[in-house]
Length: 80
Image (cartoon, rainbow, N blue to C red; front, side, top):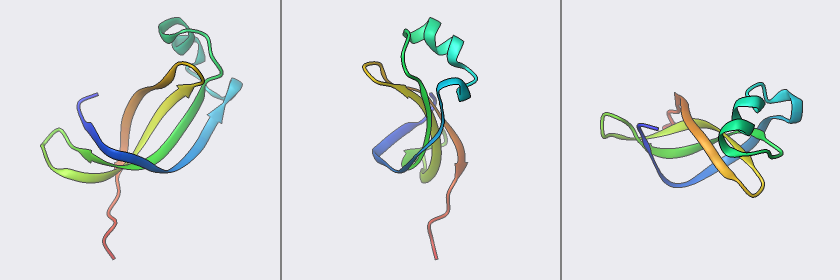
């Protein structure tokens, strides 16, 4: 992860769960067996360039294991 999440992630949604998570095998081998879900949300991030921007981030999470493998999908312009 070459960026830093500043503050909380908001507007959280589940994208996939159970068999819908295609990287389930990788997640089970790397972090342990769990009920994996792919999630998305919006967060303030410090981009690799050093600028603060709002971005849509995706990650995987499982109960008892936590949030893993964050990535920025796109930057969100929140100005009117």
